[in-house]
Image (cartoon, rainbow, N blue to C red; front, side, top):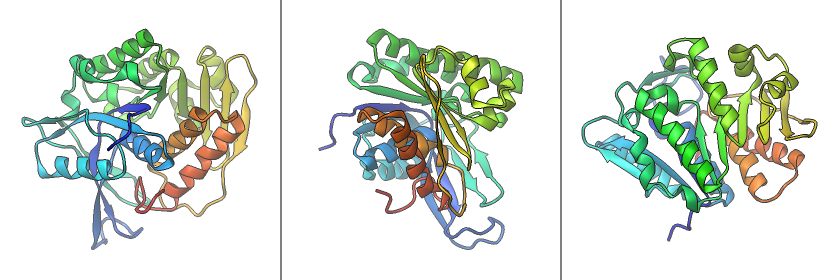
Length: 298
């Protein structure tokens, strides 16, 4: 029996097609089909670490959708709040190691989610809700859904973790993304953002600059790739922990793994520096592999 979730993540998951070994997509001959989505990645890593977690979303009534839901459930994630949409497909994306990713997600089932989807979610019954800046960029209805999640969580006194996760191709302009993502981040209790994306969105070249822009967020985590990460609690100076030195295979998904490690440690009462170290330790698992959630991950 799946334990009662302590964390609820909400957002789109697609089928991820990735070469079986770290080689260019154009020449690869063997591939894996795995779930790929920021929120389900976080859920999978949290569940592997021992934090009961649920992932809520929508998939198409198709083989790919059924496959990815089964795979996520097999990782120990509660998928009870995943909707099956017979009128829209499951999204898909392809990872090209060293050259980024290609998305095929337009009109996906998850992009059709709307505000009423929140009615069925157990927001008041969990310790934490996790969302990302990808969801509001998928469609107007998903944008409204994100606001509704934040509203319901605030009303229930449940903290929200928000990963900025700026995906430029999903937004009409950088200015539009900058305004909306800043507004959402300001409403969250815990915010994760990469220093490079923060600088690109808001012109904040240092972690302290990001903190000055978001002074009231209870807990702000600014990630700076191989340099490390800095976390700020309200009313206190930032705490910095260097990243681990590791041979990089693929960095896509590392931020999700970091967030899960950090949140798991936070929920366990760890100090800020321990939370950051836990995030780095989890991110290493993904950086050294082509998969967002490497096989055998525990």
